[in-house]
Length: 335
Image 1 (cartoon, rainbow, N blue to C red):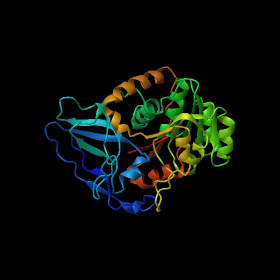
Image 2 (cartoon, helix red, strand yellow):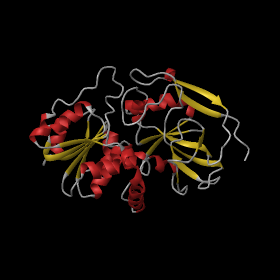
Image 3 (tube, rainbow, N blue to C red):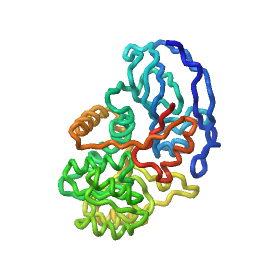
């Protein structure tokens, strides 16, 4: 194969204050490095845009090193191997892994897995990708739902929340979602099979929880933090499990993050609040992918992606996540 002429690359050049802006990134055309032994060249087709990316831009202690200033912006992606000096990969293979925000990626293959192109490639950035792994292990390992229990999930139609709710239904739970807008709530109930969904933009969340969770809340899967977390804590049951996956309402704060004011509810109810970082479960990804692949084939799981186009629009498309403008897993088609 003739080597591609140039690689379109997005680099982080400043630490964002509040929402990430175009001026926080550079967009350049760079030469594609030659392959060494044991490396592959991947043409990036789709990129996964995730709330975690905003945290990766910040300095400070976290579960993963921040993206260094001047480095290519970190992102998971799916693409096609166009050249290989690696024994496990051949030109024409389709793979998923940390391609980062660029049109071509040179890698030694660590963290990359082959995917089946007979399925929509975007599924590997959603239900069969990091969001799906987060939902699977966060709910089943940290949340530990039991049949008949009530599970509440915020960000209910987002990449993680939609899968959490569907898995909870598979496990025989009463599932209540929280989402923004009537269209999203209707989708959660009519398409994803939730028992109820509260529209936080147009409904009183306290009242909605009281009406939808008649037996209280046994598991709360939190993707948003802030006021909604506080409200749900007022409804939890004895031995409830609160899974802290994210706090998208807080990521762009320019003041310190506000913690829950109703945390004493954890004491009174002997409840447990636990964070979930999906990378902790990396050795078990195949287990989760096999199970969720089966549920997909059986029609028990739906995977909805919201696809935007053009790597040059990365900064603006990323912002859609934090304004709630995506409907389903946000994916950027590179070309």
